[in-house]
Length: 347
Ligand code: FES
Ligand SMILES: [Fe+2]
Figure 1 (cartoon, helix red, strand yellow):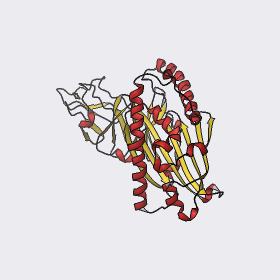
Figure 2 (cartoon, protein in one colour):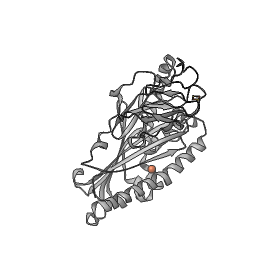
Figure 3 (cartoon, helix red, strand yellow):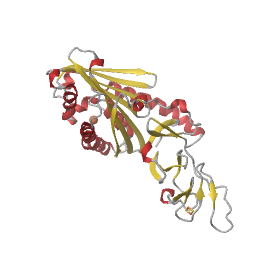
Figure 4 (cartoon, helix red, strand yellow):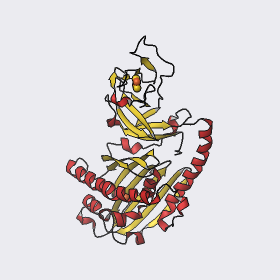
């Protein structure tokens, strides 16, 4: 499958990669991750060039990984540094593909594409570093569906009324004001919800004294290929936004294959901070919505779609689809440009 080239993708949470070899399939290929003795992240092809054994089953010696099968050792630059067989010659072909990585915002990002890695192309998620402002919970979900279906899900939050009754209110979609905006490659879905009964979490955040209705918002920012920020909050009816409470969530989706995705999410809240029991409750509620409600419907969607392209299926468009449609249009344009890049240097 053609993935968007020359971009940074979320490969792992920082805490997932340590001295123990760790493997994750990204863009149809198994990638080996480990930290060197100085703590730097190494990302290499997980396929030994001798007989194609998986290197993550091997062992680290200093900064070099030893293949579990016949013992070739490879350094963090991918070059073979030791051959324990016979005279120990180092064949020129004994070389692993090395991937560029950046560690930022508690995420290990991997560069996918033939162009030299460009740190300026990293999509910023600065709020993930604002520990004095937010208390965070996070999770990882493997989804058996194309990554764009997850973007669609997040860019069209009208589904909450039907799929997440705990996070929405009956009839909410008749009251919401949908606005879609495009700014360069960035798409925003702004959903203003004035005069809405508070959801369970927002009532817990604002307290019972806030009244029967509040002003709510749920705003989504999307950057290609599937890097999203979802902001949900509320304030007393007519009060300024700053007087209310807010959550900011990063949703980082990375293709494993055309029909399987890695979904990293991390949500920060400005309210009831320093309360681990409340954090556990938020974690359980959010995680259950994603795992028990979003994941099954997205996977069933993919199953129904099979391998037929989204546009070929001629989908119906609703008022809430503006932002997702804009994102799909941008992706189609970028993927078309991508095709030229792939011809120059196949990945
Ligand atoms: S398969 Fe790795 S050394 Fe033989
Ligand atoms: Fe959802």
